[in-house]
Length: 223
Image 1 (cartoon, rainbow, N blue to C red):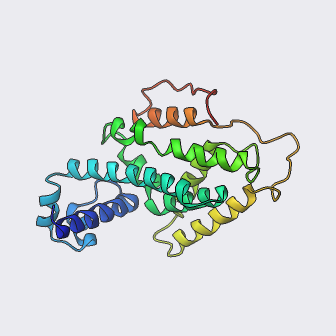
Image 2 (cartoon, rainbow, N blue to C red):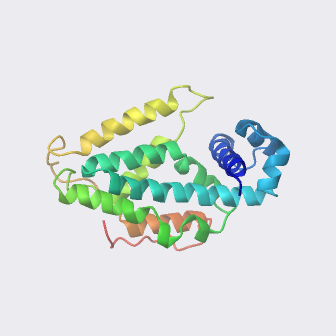
């Protein structure tokens, strides 16, 4: 693929990701082309159908999460700062908003390729910070996953202009509160459930299949 074609493809995927986050996967294709700054014919040359574009966006989003997690693990010597780097990148990726809209549109195997699942390196980031004594010992991977999901939810109403900036600010406050000794021992410990990586994977599969998978999560597994 020529450099200009690769550039156009990347612009279309980014525009589609943002459009799906704002309006869902049924957004008109001409609107995605407009957001990308390309003609509709260019979009169709790269992605001949709506389903082809949805499939490509799904793969692109999950790849970006995996790469963000591995880059953070390799690029930051401070384990908490590595976790911070990943979580901010995850917010920027729009994955937590986009992926749920694609459930039922794309085979779950595309969304959750076990060999390139961001939960693996993310679990390593959490464990490394916890084992170094820099992250409170009762924090598990699922706490990070679900905080990203909650922060990614847009404010109610139409287009609050500071929404994304506010989410990043709140993420930094959240992360600073997870550091030791800022977070001292909590009497009685944190309430259950402590959501393991295995449980997060189960919940994703359950959502991706529209609730057809077993609803009973595996409580055991890696933290």
